[in-house]
Length: 183
Image 1 (cartoon, rainbow, N blue to C red):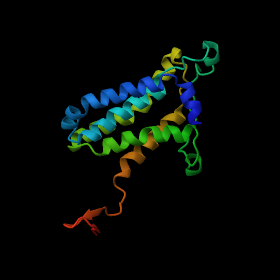
Image 2 (image 1 turned 135 degrees about the horizontal axis):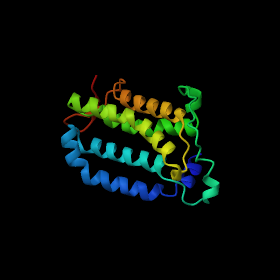
Image 3 (image 1 turned 45 degrees about the horizontal axis):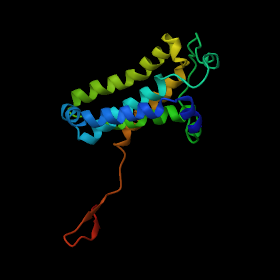
Image 4 (image 1 turned 60 degrees about the vertical axis):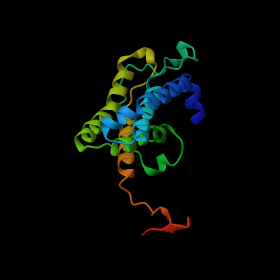
């Protein structure tokens, strides 16, 4: 499934490279503005770049007529919350969920709370904007689908709540360099 996604997205590697460069260039200033460490700002920009790369770039390798199946003039409106069994394998739903988890993790780390709420609202609006663009711009050769919105929002929520889960304590170094577990 992942090979099929990469084959259908020939601009994946250039998009990823541009996302990494953008994330490297703005991580410090964006991190200061959002109240996060530079790595979190890097993750935020990188995840946004990955989302744009995988959802809004057309398949340039295939013939236009081959891609007409994606230019569906009807918005697919049936949806459901993906079940755990559907997420256990690599498929379109699980990849749509996984695509938004890093964004959710980055958003959950933003401080102060006012910026966090605004960024979370923008992140939650993103799946709607993506599907609207896929519907409104037929040359993207993408099918707008409400199921993608549900999967993306689930991934965003999972990422935002991942930091709230209890984690085992990290080993801490003692004065002699031996690892000690702190309760």
